[in-house]
Length: 288
Image 1 (cartoon, rainbow, N blue to C red):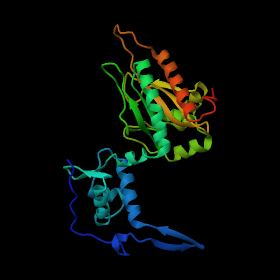
Image 2 (tube, rainbow, N blue to C red):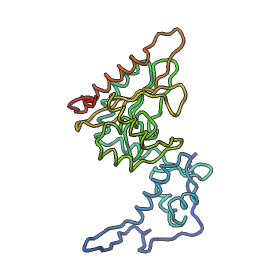
Image 3 (cartoon, rainbow, N blue to C red):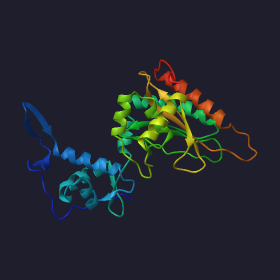
Image 4 (cartoon, helix red, strand yellow):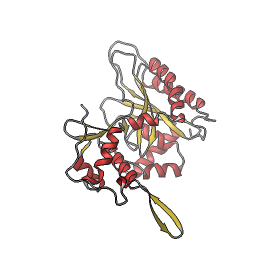
């Protein structure tokens, strides 16, 4: 149940009035630099909440962003009113999917998802497994599309879920099929997610080299026992990975006939190559 936030006993306006919305201008070595204090507060709040699946109370949120409660209250209320955050019965603030919805309005992302969904459905039907499409975003991996297995049971990840960059097959594919400059930038921006395992840089380098040589990642899940993750890159016009297609493979042990892990890997390869062609890639897995 969503609740309206209640005001703290003390409120402060920005030093320039109107809730600090005016731009503060400072000069430095002949260059003008502009600051928007209220916007900074809002972005601090959104970034802090993005790192916490359980959210924060207003006091905890103020401590997290290094500000007083009275400094962030108006911004928190505004973000709630605009639908970016919500408040539960325990007065804990959490993010809604509003930013994710906005991201999906971007034409490149809409085009990718629109082109991918029919192929993901084909993949699920041919492999008899669930599958998802993921991409790098802000130091993590986010699921942007998902199709469930047609079987009576399935295992899959929800759209909007964030995953680790360094301990998942999707993350390995997204890192492996970028140039060194992009890869370094992605790793510098890396933000750990809940439960993400520490990865030794040398070990990660070896894994990424192996993924590049094979053209894909296939490894037991480091999050769920009994799952083998099979991930292939979706290449873009610049011939680097723009997304990854992942199948969290579950082996059947009853009498039902189903594609084995080798067959599923071949299916994923085929689907990823076709999606890459739609995205303008001039070649596929040239690193093989």
